[in-house]
Length: 332
Image (cartoon, rainbow, N blue to C red; front, side, top):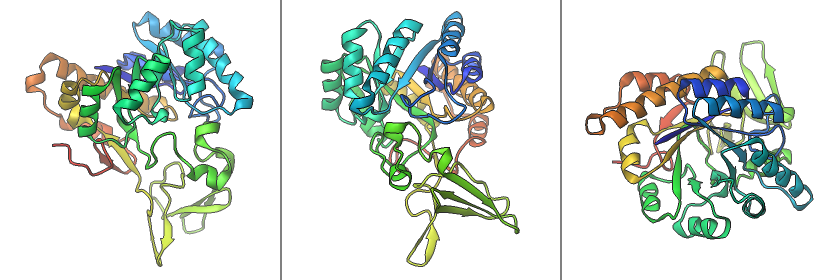
């Protein structure tokens, strides 16, 4: 199985390749990708350098073009497809049909992967994208159970990639409305959930902190309580005079224990979430998954989950950890 790792910038790309990634995924410094945070992503020259670095070490670079343009801005996504082909990207990861159609017609030799933002959860959806746009791979949404992944692998006309580790979202990918409800900026169209310009942290005299998104109180944290990046879905709310995570508790996906089953199902690639994370995260997580995959390839029959692998991944988890599926779906 291929290990596909996040590259939020050139140092992260180099770290992922050095730590054993078979491929990295990156984005341009604009709203054509779904991690359009300030300080992240690549200029043309940086991506060219990253592709050169990755290819020298036999790794691939995929370009994320996974947001949804409106008609007035579609030319920007077309231009990004053109640049991906010119710069030598190994594939694009796209969700919107107009972008996929343009890439198929204009650059037929550039492989097209259906993004998780395309939210394809059925064999007919995968078949349509394959027949209409010639996709060669599809990234499945993280809301699927292991049983659903297995069935799709059996019936899909294209190779299947699944997320292996990282942050989770309660929304079916490509359908999030919460951030745009509060800020007017959609992660699907503008490339970022909880845009930084709308986030305000307040420090209080007792050491506690509160965070607001567009002046809406999202959460409050006790002194020394861990606080992740604020999103509406993972905030705490007053419901019936009780304050709790009404929509979703902070949870990370970790499918390490499912590795043999994913391989047997025919999954061709495992994706690590986290283009917004730093070099230390990318290095540690990539190296840990590389060890597990190499051990699986060497002796699948005797492969066992190692406690030190899980301990290392736990350092980077957002709250609780869960395997594939809607949080508590049994995999055995």
